[in-house]
Image (tube, rainbow over all chains, first blue to last red; front, side, top):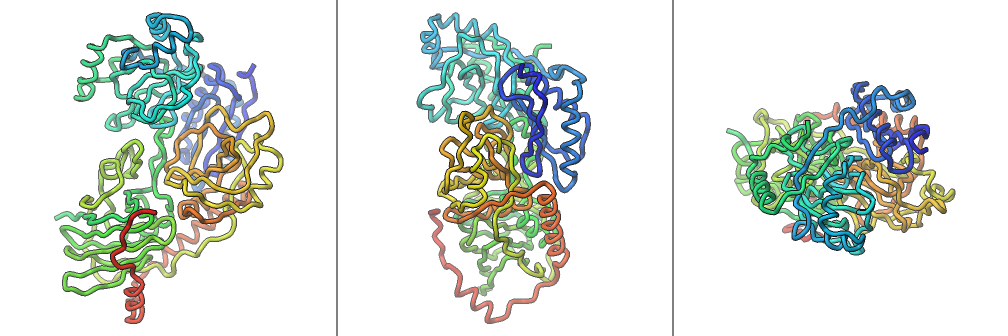
Length: 246
Length: 344
């Protein structure tokens, strides 16, 4: 099974190492990635600036003037090979994020439901029941790649990407779900929209709402509630922490 | 009274940049920062700033600007020059790699950037509020700089505290040496996903920078780099970094630069080493380049050699000799007067 593959140490130039645990997307592979991220953070290497967990690898960016890259690589591989101290999911937070599905907020929901032969209400119920796992943040600041989408909702991307996806759109593509933090071009299918800001630079050290390892549930809300929360959020009166599940 | 820089007119992309935004790449926040970090560091050293101070990054052509409030020392680094029109009506040529003093009312007009990028540092640094640990502009997410965007005529930039400039002006002992030869790269992280001959092609062929070139990356034209049969170009996305050479299915390499995303889904055959990253920032559409593979020890030696050279240049900063009359006439004649800066 892919989760048991021995880790590989790959150079991303002379200022970063990528420790790769497998080729595919699987919760057990990602758990090893997150466990290594915890272990490397605990090593408190002064030359290391960034730890980037992805679906199947951890990339460690470092200052090559402050560290012997080869020696750092050996320490990383040793940490990756050692049995993990934790499960790698302990640090992940759980969220219940409000989102309004379908209609103008999720213009592709009806088509997705029709394609798989279920009602829109059934599609929303599937989205609400799912526990999504944030595998990584990429593409743009705060954009979460989330796995765990129920199989009936796995649909291909749009053949022609939209030029403008509204900010905060909830989207699905293949086995993944995401929320667009910014207005941008995009080919994922838009099923809903959250009133919460996914990225806010004024939030200081945690500008992105979600982080790798987090788990996300959606809380379906009506349009009126969406509008109320959107206005509160725009006015800066919404503390996103209230959507965290204790 | 504090001092400000006022941008009077802009003739090419102009942004505030420093050494970039570290520690947030796991949240998708790109590094950004100066494309040619060495040039910005030298400009900062000339005006007495720490290496991490923010300056102006200029591409295609420099702006016209003035200082408001108090006199400030400025320095240019890179292939750019210009002139200062003093309040008494006199004109003085402005060269890179040395300081000049701008008094309120003086007009600094810069000409074309005859290479990929050049910098202006002002004593005290550009003091826009740091955002997420950096003043670097990342326009795609409206982070840093002035309101998260490229600068325009009429913009005013606060400057940090600095002592009042007194003669003499300062200069680098000699401009940094022109670097030439193949760009040095380390194989990986996905070199095993390419056909056996792809690495030979990368290291023997000549590539040309296409017009698809911005702060995110450069798309190259040249012989295609083929992926291993059955492998394909697409990988499950993993982390990327400036210098990475990613190759989509068409086989045409893309060189990533400072504003590149934090992750990507194309296989990366090799990654340009830190010592050569400033050279990538200087590339322009039409420029030709080639690659050479090095091992980690060679990459480290190259970086240490570069740092030693930069340190010795900076250590050699001393009083500038004033330009002679002939030189001044030469510079004045060479100025592109009234450069009209529509980007090509």
